[in-house]
Length: 248
Image: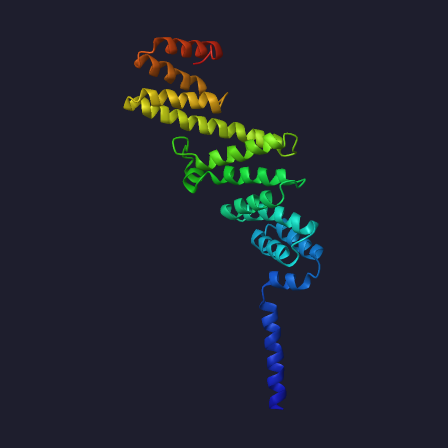
């Protein structure tokens, strides 16, 4: 009788352990095909359970490394990592997909998401909470985002992601140009007029149309005048007046 009671206790204990096991692991055990596992990962994505989605997508890639679901899982993994807040893993997933699938019909998405991850990762907590202007700090993530989106647009101008990429690039162009402007201002305060001219020239060459351009040209005029290069100062002044006649 005692042995029977012990057996009952053992069975109940195993049942409790089964109930307390990781539900994501149970989903993996229940998924017998790539389609089933991919569907389970999609359920997690839809529910906003991004860590679970990452767990399932990575297991799909490990257990079923070939076929249409494996390729789509690699693409979805970029978003899942990004949504879960893991910027480095998202970038790595995008780079891996681009490297392994350079001619895939959806490789433009990997380029686009790489730009988006850097774009949205450029603001830190202080900027988001206290609305601190980041334009006077080195915009490393903004530069990487601009580069990735620019590359995507150059290679896939008809991509469905092109309109959003272009909007983001306008913001990034102004952000990057404003930073260069702040550096040019710093050089002017230090009397490094050649450095200021070079920074403004960089803005004109790489960020044409940026909103800060007229103010940057004013710095260029001032710097050339202080260098005694009156002809170049006059040229810069002419460009300023022809392109921005109504500036404040």
